[in-house]
Amino acid sequence: MEKRKLGKTDMQVSALGFGGSEIGYQSVAPSTVKKMLNSALDAGVNVIDTAECYVSSEELIGQAVAGRRKEYYLFTKCGHFAGWGQPDWRPPSLLKSIERSLRRLKTDCVDLIQLHSCSEEELKKGDVIEALKRARERGHTRYIGYSGDGRDALYAIECGEFDTLQTSVSLADQEALELTLPLARERNIGVIAKRPIANAAWKSGDRKPADSYAHPYWERLRKLNYDFLHGELSESIAVALRFTLSVPGVHTAIVGTTKPERIHENAAILEAGPLPKDLFEKIRSRWREVADDAWVGET
Ligand SMILES: NC(=O)c1ccc[n+]([C@@H]2O[C@H](COP(=O)([O-])OP(=O)(O)OC[C@H]3O[C@@H](n4cnc5c(N)ncnc54)[C@H](OP(=O)(O)O)[C@@H]3O)[C@@H](O)[C@H]2O)c1
Image (cartoon, rainbow, N blue to C red; front, side, top):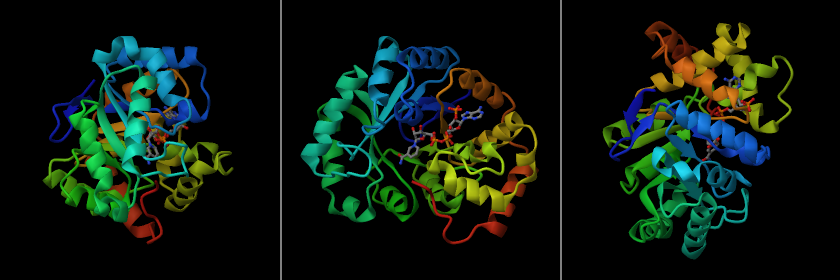
């Protein structure tokens, strides 16, 4: 599988990465996660992304592949020790969260700790960044990053403290292409595209997806109404993933899934390489035509 150097880090990451939120939120069986992650590593995927608050995700990953730790780069996040929606940015809580992540992931050191979508205001106070640096000094992480969107993400790049940015990039979420990615490229920041296939929000057709998490993209995509969304699902997923990986500055796209067969389906998509320039530009110009100011990067 194609590998790309993750910005200024020493990591050569696979273009397709594994997003770990669904396995936790949807309580996927440990045996299924084991099968899924082992086949991902066998297929050449070497990025596993998770977070402190994705329910059982960290434990599931630790149980499934800790024995193959040298074969993958492990990214997690901190800031929501007690669960999403209950942020706690105090340095002792961040450090406690990181130590808990290491235990759950059955490792002494992760490759990347990311601040999990804190505000620009919080970043400016500086304590959160100092806490991450302390974790790095303690040998708990090799690199530090920021995960989030919009002006918060822009400040995270500008402040010069982070090695990486994880941000939403997809055919239904293109704010980053103008707001943050040009500067990220200039500063040689590693970019991890989250929500890279827009939660596959169009797959339920005219019916709103059951999970409200996908509603903003479902609504946007109805307005964007790209013609290829009306064809075969496997082909539209392929266009979506190739679009994200063709965006200048993106190094890896961490697709989330609950199903082992997706690994090979998504890995196979990459064999076709970047999206043809004319289709890429069509998706960009349709976005410019339709997107309104409220279509900001979805956290
Ligand atoms: N603030 C943050 O830091 C933040 C926020 C959001 C996400 N993230 C990270 O980004 C990762 C990815 O985001 P995401 O999972 O929300 O969005 P996503 O990767 O764009 O979409 C995931 C959805 O796509 C479906 N899917 C995957 N491959 C498919 C295929 N070949 N055909 C049809 N459907 C397919 C999955 O369903 P199936 O289960 O049916 O495959 C899942 O519902 C997360 O896991 C997480 O690691 C971080």
